[in-house]
Image (cartoon, rainbow, N blue to C red):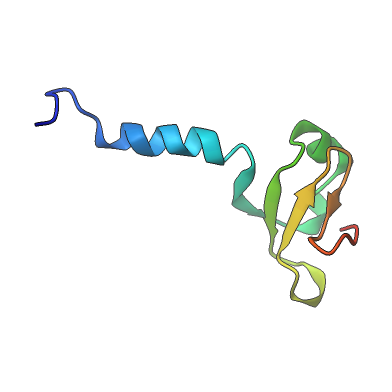
Length: 73
């Protein structure tokens, strides 16, 4: 039996807090992926809405964003 004050969203929030510092929930355009943003969120994976050649994700290395194949965004 669950406790009376059980919050079903608490487990979801706890998982989100562990996963989403590294995977963004927002979709970005390339112009938003600045060096300052990369430095603020190192090793974050982001989705891109206007990536070239159907590339839709990029990963920050702490100074810039790169496509998974290593090409700079």
